[in-house]
Length: 232
Length: 232
Image (cartoon, rainbow over all chains, first blue to last red; front, side):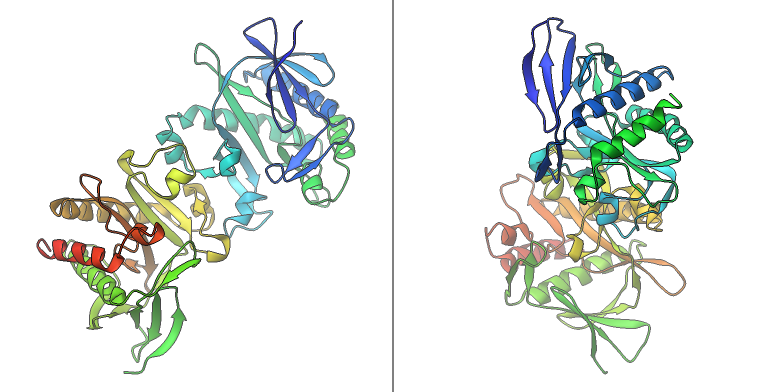
């Protein structure tokens, strides 16, 4: 199978295959933060994020959420449906942390009930700015299907992590459309794009460990993978 | 009447008076942009912004919009009802310009139909970030009365400026609550916090002249004041 690089992202590389309806996504041993200003290359990180994403996408698929995931031809590579990716990041928040705390007077740890869904422009050159639902609509994107799907994903993931003794604080989703305009969950689902806190809030198991220089992310991600495997 | 300074803002100074339910607002001969990074002191600017605000607030009051304005004891000073100011700036947009263009892929001049109302946190230390309606609600602020009032103001101002051959592109409002919790329009209403373009889009009459170094704002603001006086 030929592998021609289409796109080199910050931590994943996209390849085309002999099948024009599919792509391969290779998860690199790389972690970045601050729009690429911080960067490290932890060994085994690509594999663990790929495995976690595959496991969670399979779990979501078995619960009627359509994703781009097909299978894993190797431990760090996913075969996926080729999609036209929507130019927004969709964030679902259960507990206030990260950018919402920095740019409001809402304090970290505040319980967001009901959970909210937010949109950010996927544009590194503009620093991925927050969008209002009005702005998303003015960009020609229907917000309602994205909000509904993000809520469905949250309704499935939150109880799963609770079984593991973990609070799903927030997570980022990306979506794409196939040639028929049907919506699929795309990208990745790993502690690189979720915040995971122990129920007692003494430990975190996500990329904030790297952002704050507080621990080994590969070890932390492995803890999550092991816990999840008991229940998925 | 005693005048004790309560608060020195970037272009206005607030004084308390002998009446605990009132304040005086003095409009300074000062203009700033970029969160205070650009600053100039154009002579006559305080007076023209004070006069324009007084005129527009009286016009809105006569159309059932409650404002904090009482009267002008001098040309650059307004006597106002003392309010507890909401910590958000409320922006109404009819045409895309400014920050919405910088932080989305919406192009300048795009007609926003229907107009949208946006919220920004009033916090210079955080650079006045955009808020979603969800974030405003999480901050404990009821968005609906603010959105409704902003739309009402737009419905009154837009046709007034059209009579003058001017497109009201966007404008910023601030609101405050009196001791009974009743909502009033507060702050200022001048080309310092609106964008005003000639219908043919060849001229602007607002603070962007200063931001972009394209002309004399006091002269431009006087053109607007003269035009408005024909109709108010």
